[in-house]
Length: 182
Image (cartoon, rainbow, N blue to C red):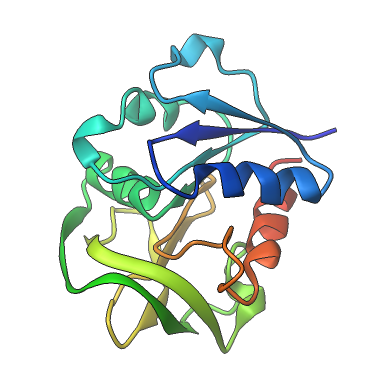
């Protein structure tokens, strides 16, 4: 059975990420983001959302583990910031229902959602420029980088929250990620 660790970055929806995966039959555990990388024993990691990029613990080191990683909201921003992308303040701000256009229909994480999907997202901060090796895989009218992927390194990110009920195809995002972890 696939084992996924959800890395807790102090976000309000972290418990919903664990629950969504557990409801899909996944062996899942939430771990503190201060957990030493050598103690992580999972087939994949979800870097949760959270309020503050200054409280990301060992998340940068987790990107060097040889497992697929899905960054959600702050988790995606961590990936971008650590791998030479650029993160900045969003113009839109708080949580809202957003229509997202899938720009890469062949992408293993979000391609199956093409041509568009409705999501629940926060844009207080967002990825402004994807890191080298990544493709921007989704955009919206309020954010040019709603999702990004580097399948060669098995690193993925979404600005939105697939774990909340307001996101129409959130379970499909998790299922697509799980397929990369087997």
